[in-house]
Image 1 (tube, one colour):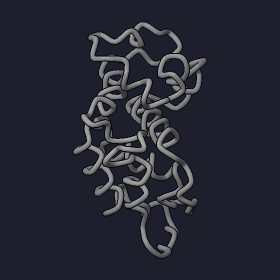
Image 2 (tube, helix red, strand yellow):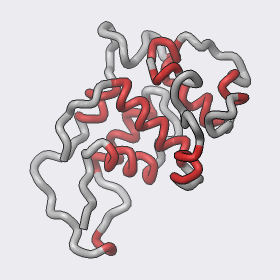
Image 3 (cartoon, helix red, strand yellow):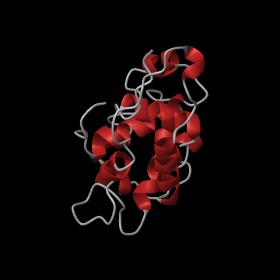
Length: 159
């Protein structure tokens, strides 16, 4: 498992990339020149994304550099509108990086030996997913959240 080093911006970016990948191949995401990043989402600067407002459809939907899925664009912006902002700000009540890392498994878990031993979810994944949903995140279903936590080093499924 990796150390709890990535901050809010890195976690926000990883959750967004996993959400955008949902239902698509990674090749589709990687072929996009800027994927969901600057300037479409201002480099995942959460305070700037929070300033986008609630225009529907959001201008990022027309940005050819990203996957132009209105629901996914709005899902990226939605949690930044929580009042007070729920992450990124030093005065925030909840920071997304601390929230996600709070669900890191304690101790070491035996790695799966066979592909059939790999579980689709864990209590930590389910807990993080539910906590993020309470804070306005969408597109954090079990598979997406499990993949995000793998990318963050919280779940080790290497055989």
